[in-house]
Image 1: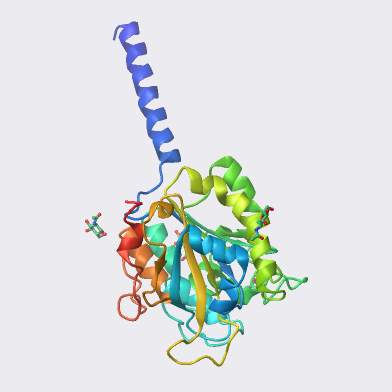
Image 2: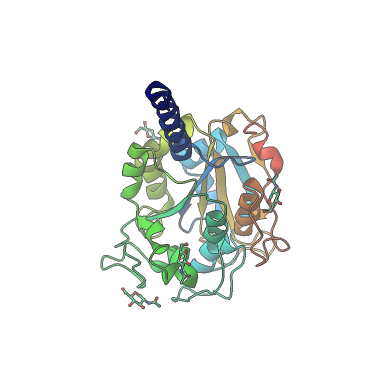
Length: 299
Ligand SMILES: *[C@@H]1O[C@H](CO)[C@@H](O)[C@H](O)[C@H]1NC(C)=O
Ligand SMILES: *[C@@H]1O[C@H](CO)[C@@H](O)[C@H](O)[C@H]1NC(C)=O
Ligand SMILES: *[C@@H]1O[C@H](CO)[C@@H](O)[C@H](O)[C@H]1NC(C)=O
Ligand SMILES: *[C@@H]1O[C@H](CO)[C@@H](O)[C@H](O)[C@H]1NC(C)=O
């Protein structure tokens, strides 16, 4: 072969390889509604109390406020399990309990969609105890570690990380498409109060993730694990504050939705967004996906 032709072919070949790698590295798996979802879960506040907080009320006016959203149980832990399994899966207390079977991360991995659980004060390395020494990290607020298929597999539990990692992932442009964020017991408001949690959002968390919201199809969901009221009526059971925030959501004409939703609504919505297979835990029967209309301006 003529040397020049060989050089040209080689150059084209290298160009194609680079192009493929570049595209692979930078492209997110497109979702119908969003390309990334970040869920942050605060602790123990009832709807009216949250809405009385000036910053949470402000956020409610900036996104879509779900004014009829409910946690599914007391105490905390089953609510976290529900968010990734669309089922309490037999977990009804805060004690360590190991859950057999697939959860949301299994479905995401199947479609090549990246995920990470960012846990404040998490010691890392598959740590599976009830709490860290300082008790700021608690296992009951980390549903991923209760999944046998994740906890017992070192190539999967590495996606449960100390939350400090998020800053670096933002700088490196490697933030996954599914982000679950659990603040520590103080920042979540659990051991403090809802105003402490909202100050934490306003001064620390929102400024940190704001760059992600600006130029990408990223949806931020702020919710609470459970209401601090244990004795509310059955019709208003476990009523909590939840808001959807994102640059595209902000264009929505309607800022409040009083449709009845709960923690089971996440899994079927995320399944639909990325055409995932169904978990079969109740996600297709017991739970109501979030209204498609929310996302109209993102599509
Ligand atoms: C949010 O933080 C900003 C800047 O620190 C501050 O000016 C503002 O008053 C805070 N908002 C609320 C409702 O606390
Ligand atoms: C918890 O982690 C330790 C290692 O730190 C491991 O030996 C043990 O098997 C784990 N327990 C469970 C239930 O996965
Ligand atoms: C552990 O996870 C990896 C990556 O998902 C998977 O390929 C492997 O089969 C899993 N191992 C077991 C024992 O399930
Ligand atoms: C959704 O996934 C199923 C099965 O994995 C596949 O047959 C179907 O074509 C997919 N639909 C879209 C719109 O990608």
